Image (cartoon, rainbow, N blue to C red; front, side, top):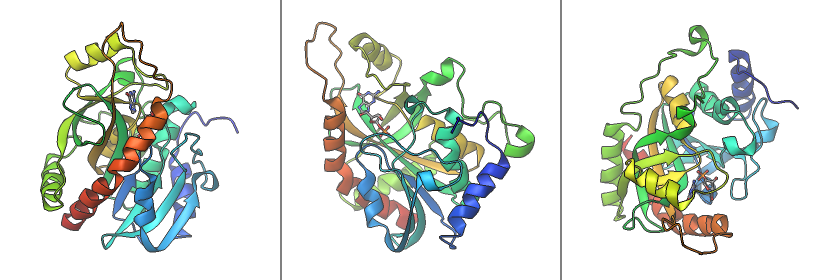
Length: 285
Ligand SMILES: O=P(O)(O)O[C@@H]1C[C@H](O)[C@@H](CO)O1
Ligand SMILES: Nc1nc2[nH]cnc2c(=O)[nH]1
């Protein structure tokens, strides 16, 4: 099927109705599982409904190892949640509109807070694999070249065209996350996430540049979801799992061919701690 070149409210309604027909309760909180973090969805309590993205009208199916592509609805820490077990990335050949379509459906289902998680490379030597970071802010590199998940959408139908991006990662929610981490005894970093298009990793020169521009970690996702969530007035919490430390030496001959497998392994190691922070956070929302 050819990629749709736009998103309409009818498409969102069709997808939302499809999900509602299988899960009649209204989810309050959305969760997007990043690379290797899909098991967060396995802790959704009964009665959990699982729907393959490919079965939902207008959803693209995820194609990345470590992203199963299943929407899971049920309860987590006593609250009704809608969990994306795996996300959609622009580098899969999908448009920004397709990648952020599930976020619009979550908003229409009634989600008011979304927890976005991702795997990211560390640009700071002190941020080590296995560390968990709350996203304080982001740098949207694809946005600098004129790409936005809001492009071409009519403001009459979708709401604000000029969506503010200050406080995109809600400060009050970040404070709750910090308290939740303290309550669960998990240490937490905080920092700035830079999104690049991928799927190739960064050169050492690019990593040095990103660091000098104020980014703490680098990844290939999340930002388009945040932008759409904010247009839909959904509040955002962002977590990066540090899965690798980037190479900054242009003379390094380190073999990085297996990095994605390293990424999946490191994410899985942090999944239980992240789950504990998320459960404590949800409890306070
Ligand atoms: O979906 P996320 O951002 O967690 O996935 C990251 C970026 C690439 O998809 C992949 C690289 O290993 O992990
Ligand atoms: N772009 C990018 N994405 C990642 N995801 C996990 N690690 C990395 C990384 O080093 N760079």
